[in-house]
Image 1 (cartoon, helix red, strand yellow):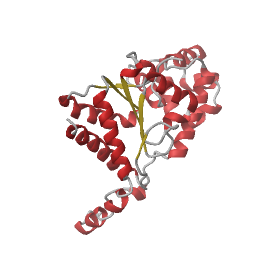
Image 2 (cartoon, one colour):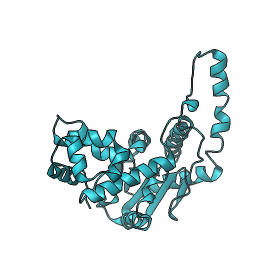
Image 3 (cartoon, one colour):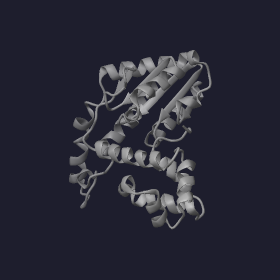
Image 4 (cartoon, helix red, strand yellow):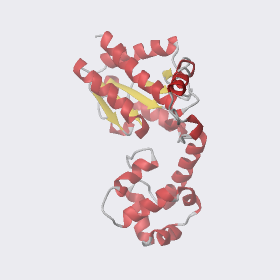
Length: 258
């Protein structure tokens, strides 16, 4: 299997940003008609994209799949993940709405403590301290996560670089080439997606590359690995604040250990 991003969008993105060609045409159609792909044959996709079936075959291999069947199965799994974890932003969860009065804004901000107070526990903070101690002790630190976690990972890495931490962001454990005993691996997984595909193999891939693995997630799905558990909020904007707080707590904890 090729080393590729986990998200289907991450796989399609390079094709979407290039000049118009058959790959862009296929990627655009897939993106706009995602729900149709699991029941769409390679010939139907070729016809709808105005390309040849051989172009579709080359396209799916280009974005990291062995064949069209594997690609179609992956799309079906991606749709299932989206249904389970609901990435949508419901209108009723909109932070600010007209008329944007001071009273309305104040009422909104007063909801924040109740939304966030369960996100962090004393155990969570202790585990963050253990993580930071481990990152200081290991010569090689790797951050692994989906595209949605990129900002959190980059914030921690950039803020701690002046304090001696060089964290390498990776898309697959296979990218790690340093000795296992020298590595600390941190998996950022908001909804536990990483373990949804072939769970036993995924855990094995992690522990084969590092003898110090930490999972940071809002679910309990850590496959028995050390877990830094964040509470799940009722809205996407509150979850965003939780992960910003997580990043800041890691940064400050690491600094105070220096």
